[in-house]
Structure formats: structure tokens, C-alpha cells
Image (cartoon, rainbow, N blue to C red; front, side):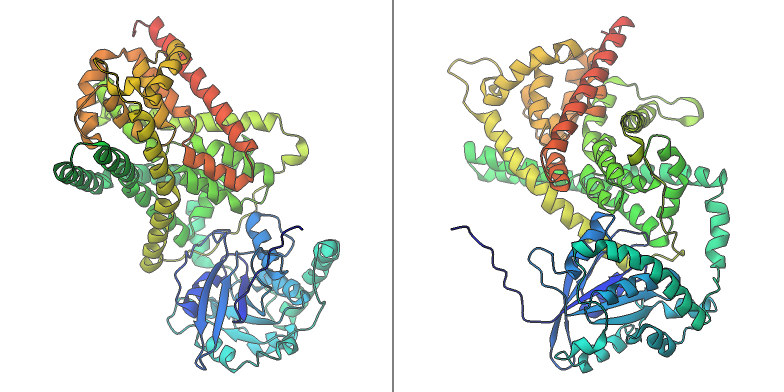
Amino acid sequence: MPESTIHFFPSEPLVALLGNPNCGKTALFNLLTGSRQKVANYSGVTVERKEGRLTLASGKVLRVLDLPGAYSLYPRSLDERVTCNVLMGRAEGEKKPNLVICVLSAMNLRRNLRLVLAAKRLGIPCVVVLNMLDIAKRQGLEIDTTALSRELGLPVLTSIGIQANGADDIKRYLNELDWRNLHSLHSGVTDLDQEKIGEHIAHAETDNVSVQKILRNLNLDQVIPDRFSDRLDSVLLHPIIGPIILAVLLFFIFQAVFSWANLPMELIKSSVEYLGGELSALLPNNWFRSLLINGILAGLGGVVIFLPQILILFFFILLLEESGYLPRAAYLLDRVMGSVGLSGRSFIPLLSSFACAIPGIMATRSISNARDRLVTILIAPMMTCSARLPVYALLISAFIPDRKLWAGIDLQGLVLFMLYLAGIFGAMAVAWILKRFTSEQFRMNALMMELPSYHLPRLGNLAISLWQRAEIFLRRVGGIILVMTISLWALSSFPLPPEGATGSPIQYSIAGMMGAGLAHIFAPIGFNWQISIALVPGMAAREVVVSSLATVYALSSSSADAADALIPLISSGWSLATALSLLAWFVFAPQCLSTIAAVKRETGGWKIPVIMLGYLFFLAYLASFITYHVALAFGLG
């Protein structure tokens, strides 16, 4: 007998917040539930629905869902699909909402009203909330809510999402609502299923006419420009000045990522060293101490130490989102991205990938074009993530002289910048090649992105968002790396060396035997057996390559200060050609296992992860082979 799944839904009424991106829906959700969620100022940031609970004055408890922003109920992207599935009762493990609160931006009724009319046709009881009414009044817009309610045939409430009491009217309305007689709030069709999509598309033209009629009846059919935003855009979107400002801004951001993170990273490193020393003094020298210090502690330290860099980068990204500048940056880069077959919408996920490829890959959910999303996922790992920095810093410090060039430019810093550029140009080259092999019907990549009004960022939202980013990173990434570190500790520790063994213990372990076999594969690109062994745990996380090299060279120092001890050893034992080859390898190296897991989750199978691993390994090997043999030709071997 086949098994069946039974879902037990909570008895509380379910209220869903529906609205276009940038309408203030998420800020209203925070006011209603007391929950904390990311509030951004560019389209598509709310990808997964978020739930909270609202306790009314009567004591009644409501479940509130913050649905992803959507422009229509005909889904063109993953976030819109989530919204449609919930509203139509097709979401896994979720019941159909009892009430839909349609949130409108008073600044853009022309676009927002289309979604209200589509939601009304679903047959779900609807209430309209007019948000940002204070901003509209400052712009000279006077909206008669009673007349709007009459035109829509739905109750219309008002809110100000950025004020502490901005949702009080909504709470009072929900408290007085007759929850047993909600059907009186709506009229329209009873449902919208997949078979009626064609009917839904036909309604879109009718909705356009209806919206024009409503706006005309409310004397709102004349567009009032946002003069402040227009003045800023005349500079920031200037075809010459705009890209220069963007380039300077990005340069400043990456400089801050490296310089501002030094102090917190040193504090984390010192804390890990201190804790490791305390555990070494307390525990006997056995396998359990090795597991605890070299496995668990090293794994956690290897993840947490890069958190400051990631949070600094996310701070600037969130700052640009909150201010409204980030979609403008995507607009400025649309022509460049279009030359390789992408749109400016891919810029945001690729920028996030400089901190870690995982959030960058997750951010592709807002890309509606399936082909663009897939290509962006494939090239996102080529952005130089923070996990590469320890390896780059080790090799640059060992082989690149610390001297100044013209205008005070540091040679080591210039090499690091060139490594970043190599990853960017490599990703653009891959995207261009994929463009050449994509049929014309899938190359319609015109950028359609809303440019919201500029806002002053709210520090509270930034702090909440950074906390959420840290939590997600440690939970989704840290857990995978910790498990893999423990597993690789076991592979590197067993079996034990035989009696009378003279080599490093790792040579006799399973990982050591794997490294010896890999040495034959990597010999043509200049890698010795020590590097080959270090690449094995490097598949779990690139940052553990430094500590793995320290183990291979039989160092007694902890992984936190292994780099300082390694520098004189590898600078005297390796050729410059080998070092340059290893740098080239890590520009294109196959991704860590946590990134592969993220790609599998986002693409729903192993096909894309396998393709990604294959092409990245090929590029890394090819780049290292060319680099190594060119270096040999110049006498650097």
C-alpha cells in the first residue's frame, strides 16, 4: 500500500502579506509580528516566505506570512513561484491563506494595483493596505482611501512601515474582523489553477485598462516625478561619471574588506590559539585530543576567522540595498554584462560571491530568466571568495617581494588585485562562451528592474540583517565544513605509521596515499606530493590548505600561526614556477563541498554540480599548466 503524507496545519487563521517589491511589505511584517527580517531596497530580496505571529487585543493569535515580492501571479522567477504556490494552496506543508493583505506603495499605484486585481480574482478574502502615505504627501500626492476602496470593492487601510505605531490601524481592523464571515470581503472567481494560466494572462490586458480607469477617477493618472532621486540619478547614472563613481566605490569596499577585518580576525585567531593551548594542557596526548583540537576546533576556527571579512562585505552590500543604489549599479553594468550574454541583474549575486559563493548562488533566485540564472550559478564560484585569501597571502608573502612601485602602490597588493581580476575575466569568458552556444530564443536578456527612490539606510535594519547573514553562514556553511574537517582528520590520522617510520605520519594515512596517487596527475603542472596531499582536505574548504601544508611538512605549530612558519620552508623548497602555478590553480580551482551542496540544492539535482566541477577542474589545470611552463621558459623553475 503506498504511503501518504498528512499535513496537520495549526488552527490559527493564516494571513499572507502580498505586494510588489519595494512596497514596504517586509517593514509592515516586522511591525505586525515583532519579527525581524531583511528589509532591502531592490527587487527580489525576499526570496523565502517568512512567518510570524500576531496576537490581537482580543487574545486571538494569527499566523502571518511575508510572501516574496511579486509583480504578477504568473510566475517568472523562483520567488514569484513561491508566492503563487502559497496563494493557490500548492505550497508543500502550508495551507491556503484565510486572508490576503495586499500592500500597496502609495508612490506607485499604477503598477501595484495590477497585483491587487489579480489577487482578488483568486477568491481569497482580501484587504488592501496603502503604505508610504507620508512620503506620497511630501511628493504632493493626495490619495482618497474611501474612493480607492469604492473603486476596488475592497477595504482599504493605511500604514507607515517605518514608524513604531504605523500598523495600529491594521491591528485594530483585524481585531474587529469577523473571521467566520470572511467571504464577504471579496468577489471574483473561486480559484486559479495551472489550467487557467491562459485565462490569467488574458486578464492582464483587462487589468491595465481597469488600473487606468481607477487612477483617472482618483485624479492620480498624472505621474509626479521624484525630483530628489532624479537629481541624484543625473550624476550617479551618468554614462561617464556613473561608472567612475561605481568603480571607486567598489575599490573602496574591497580595500575595507581587507583592512577593517584585520583586528577582529587577529582576535579570533588569538582566541582559537588560546583555547587550543588550554585544551592541550588539560587533555592527555591521545586521539581524542587530536580530534578535539585538530579536528573540531580547527574546523570551527577555520570558518569563524573569515566571518569579519564576510560581514564587512555584506555591510556595504546591505548599505547599497537600503539606500537604493544597488539596482542602479546593476543598471550601469548591464551593457558590460550584456556583452557576455547576461543582464545587470546578475551583478548582485556575483558581488555577493566575493564574500562567499553560497549566498551569491542563493541570490540568483531573483533572476527570472532561467538561462541567466543558470549561467550566473556556474560562474559565481569564479569570483574570489574570502576562503582563497589565506592561500593567496601565504604564497604572495613567500614569493613576491614586499616593495613599493610607482605612486606608492604595493607590489604584493597589486598581485592580489590581479588575481581578483583574473577570476572576474575568467568568469566573463565562460559566460561569453556559453552565450555563443545558446540559441537565440534564450538570449533575450533585457534588464527590467525597478529603480526605487533613494532612502537613508536604517541602522537597525542593517544590524538585524548582518546578524541574520552571520547566522545563515555559520549554520549552513560552518556545519558542512565542520563535518568534513572531522572526516578529513580521520583520513589524515589513520592508519597510524608503522614501527620505524621516518616520514611524516600523514604520508602513511589514507589521505597521504591519496596525495601520493594525485602527485602523478599534478606533476605536469609542477605540484609535488606535499601540495597534492594538501589539496585533499582543500576540497572541503580552501582555507585548510595552509594548515594541511603545515602538517605535511611536520610542523609542530598550531594551524593559526602555520603560515608564518611555512613561508621560509616553501620559499626555499619550491620554485617560483610552482608557486605561480598554484596561484593560477586557486583562481579557477573546483569549489568546496559546501558550495557544491548549495548548487545541488538550488538546481535540484547533481547534473549542474558535476558540470561545474568538471569545467572548473579543466580550467584550473589548463591555467596552471600554461603558467608553470611559461614560467619555466623564462627560467623561473
